[in-house]
Length: 91
Image 1 (spheres, helix red, strand yellow):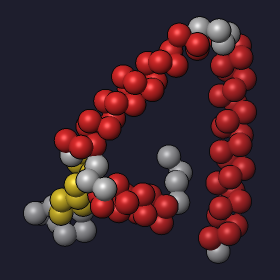
Image 2 (cartoon, rainbow, N blue to C red; image 1 turned 60 degrees about the horizontal axis):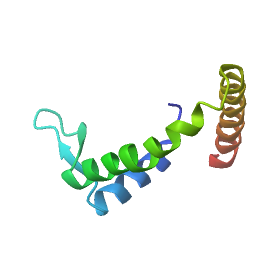
Image 3 (cartoon, rainbow, N blue to C red; image 1 turned 90 degrees about the vertical axis):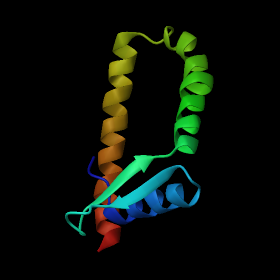
Image 4 (tube, rainbow, N blue to C red; image 1 turned 90 degrees about the horizontal axis):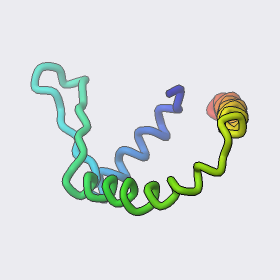
């Protein structure tokens, strides 16, 4: 996903502290960490899938395929600019 490692680490730690994720060390290799979702995390994910995203679905039919493609390209360009700038600031 081309995400900066410190941001991912911070997010995982925050989600673990809130009880959404669980980190497990590999019994075979101490350098490997597995991340699994907890029941609390599953409930939160389900809530967003059912409550939030499902409520948006009817409105998405108003967006044409051409508009969606344009939006995807724009978001992709914006994301790339943000990644490039972040690399500059991480130095």
